[in-house]
Amino acid sequence: MGTLHYGDATSAIEFDDRLLAHLQLAIVTKLRRSESFVFSWDVGRGSGSGYNSVWMSPTVPIRFTYPAGKRGPINRAWVEALLHTANSVAGLRVVDEPAASVESPAQAPE
Image 1: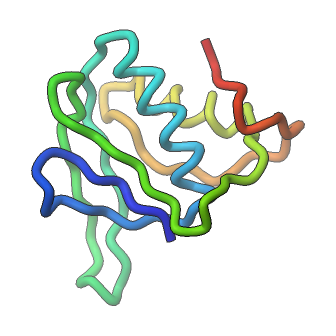
Image 2: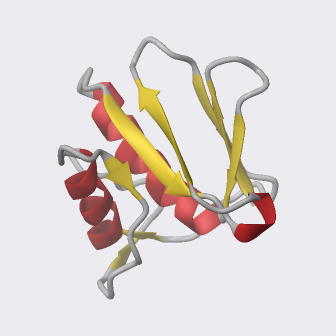
């Protein structure tokens, strides 16, 4: 499990490494453009169920950690689908990975 650290040192959110790698590209793309947005994710039953939301802003520190030390290949269609939700009124939400060609980890949407 990878971790998204947002804001203060105590704010840590765990995601599957593959999902987090795709979220990272979508989040960084938006922040690089100086675009703030809401990011919401579902909370598992083990944590009480429901969902959480945070306001993502270029002024708030963010860090991504991956215990495995490497990310797998990136599905550009998934990053584009995540960006599509981030550009909506509801903000960034986790969506299922669509079937598409896979690219190298270094490539990101422009």
